[in-house]
Image 1 (cartoon, rainbow, N blue to C red):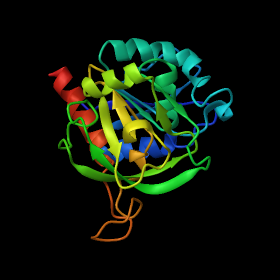
Image 2: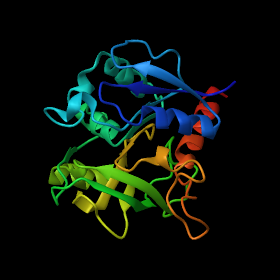
Image 3: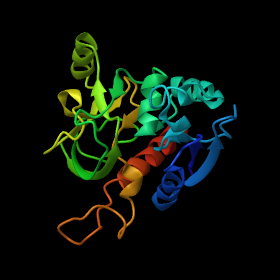
Length: 235
């Protein structure tokens, strides 16, 4: 049976169609979901995409975290469903308290767009199992409020419990504490990160590599990992 991965569209979502395309490239069926619904349509996993939900008013992701569908997202996450938050989706996850800490304006006060080197710090999650721990990957980044922050005790717990999923390499583009680019929850089914894996899944459209321009497809592994996790859970 084909894995069905839902992509939730919020007012102001920008990368929902890109996420759907990435899911299709990975071999799963993308399912479009609407923020005003209470129904997840029986999907096996969820993606909260990037963009500017509700115009980023109040705080990025704060209003979206209160959308009707988020009650179902929280319930599904609590039951172990794989949930991925990308950029604005990561902001929603922290605002919904599915991941710890917060995200603030970039330290340079500028919007940043770049192909970003990352190190995989945790390969035991539903979205990272296809990577090796310590593996270096390149994923496009584009954000204005991507600085990860947390209280000192919370940061110590995050580091101590191995909840850092990805760390920036080479350049810290937004001032994130401890170079944190992405997190996982304790169970490993919820992952959030600021870079955009959905923009690195198809040759000709991803980051440059030593092999060829725009040939980077490191982002595809996020989605194939989730497919493997859902298949394993159903077995």
